[in-house]
Image 1 (spheres, rainbow, N blue to C red):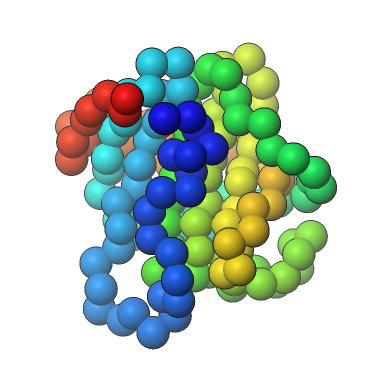
Image 2: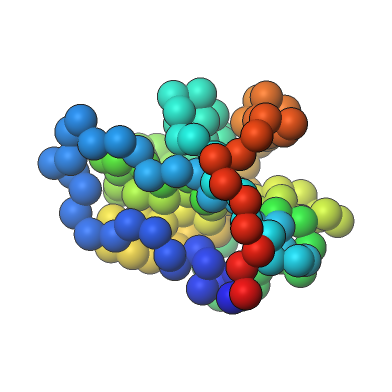
Length: 144
């Protein structure tokens, strides 16, 4: 399965009214070998993802080309987070952090209308990644 297909998996539809529902897990795709990890989606991850979104510097128009190496970290939000004062306004249901090995990290935001937005950001990813690295994921498998 390619990175674009992997990004499209997960929940969809209207999640605005889903209170008290457990958050879908965070999924991490290791691009080179297709290995996938599943992490618990907790408040720390939710806050760090929101901080990255709040630090958006540039919003790119055009087609997204997934990285050939590194990782993709998919963070779902229920309910979607509402953006204000960034290059576009609206609700975001999913954030994908792209961490290429040889280039700066960037964000892919999925809005409530299922469109993707590619953005650069300034918030460090260390707070999201360092506490999680080394913890046992919920599950790990190889994606065919």
